[in-house]
Length: 239
Ligand code: PGA
Image 1 (cartoon, protein in one colour):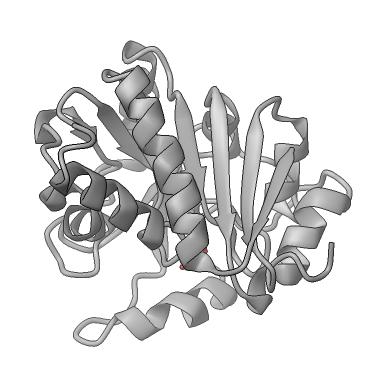
Image 2: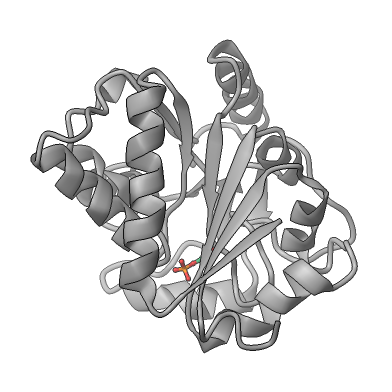
C-alpha cells in the first residue's frame, strides 16, 4: 500500500482530484467505481471544478457505485444515487447512460448477478474509490466471520446506523443495503482509499498494520497489488 498523508481534507481533495483528472484525460473511456459519504466530497468538488474550467470531460467514462440503501426510492434525497448526482454527476458532462448503480429495491440475488455481469461487460473497474467506516468496514461490508464476494444484501450495524442516521430527517434510516462485496472491490485494478479525522484512526491502523481478518474488512486491502491511501494527519495518528 502507498500511504500519503496530508494536512487536511482540502489537500486530499486536490491531490486525489488531480490524480483522477489526469487519469481521465489519459483514459477518457475508463471505468470508475465511486463511493458516497463525506470522505470523497472534496475530491468530487475538485473534479467538478476541473470540468467547469474545461480541464477534463467525463462524457466517455463509465461508473459503478459501491452501495445503495434498500427500501428507499432511488430519487429520495438520501439515496446514494441522489448523493452522486448532487455531488458529481449533475456538475459534469457525464453520460447518465453509463452510470450504473445497485438497485436497493430489486431482488438481491438477481441484482448482484446483474451488477457483476455489468462490471465484467465493461472490462472491470479501473479505479475503485473507497472510504472506511469507524469499524473498518468498506462499502457496507461490516466486520464479520468471512470476507464476502459479489454484491449482497447487508443488515447494517448499529455503528453504521449511528454514523449515518444524522442525514435522515423525514424517514427512518434504512436498516438494509445492497453493497458490492469484498471480492468485487478486490477485483478492481486500482484502489484509492480516503480517510480523514480522528474517528478513523484506529480503523486505519487496523487496516494497514493489523492482521488480515474479516473482523476488519479493510485489512484485505493489504493483499491488493495497487492501493493508494490518502489520509489526513488525524486519521494517520496511530500509524
Ligand atoms: P464517511 O463514510 O466518508 O462519511 O466517513 C465512510 C464509510 O463509512 O465507508
